[in-house]
Image (cartoon, rainbow, N blue to C red):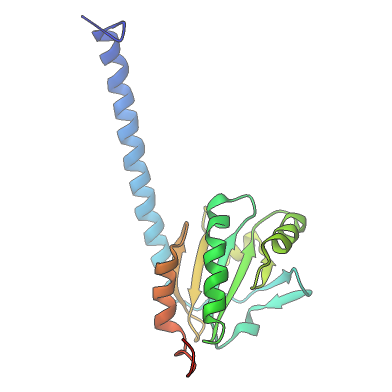
Length: 187
């Protein structure tokens, strides 16, 4: 018997190993997701690390400048499509929550400053962009993929970590719990 012009035995001999490989890859991806979630959970409730990083606008920025504020720290890079995709939502939320004791900070993991400066100019960023490094990644528990977004509460503890593209509604839900109430007279 022939299927697609090939003997059935040849097709079965090819399809079975391929199916096993695909199933193995799917199980591996699920396991990695579960491990990543478990790694994320180990950071929750811990005091956020202190840092000092190069700011694209003015010299250096130290984490203590944001003391007492809810911080959204987004580790990203200009070459990362999911990172770029979530930035419009971050800009919108940064504007929405600016009067509610929330600050957004982009921490670029690009190798050089040039692409980040161009991106900053082109995208008209409304929150600071800083240049991160491997030491800071390790201080935040080490992660192997970006984007990574940490929400730090006003007491300086890691409240939430998002791995991968953050959905606007998910981040907004967390911020509503942590942000100060809306000022009177605002919509």
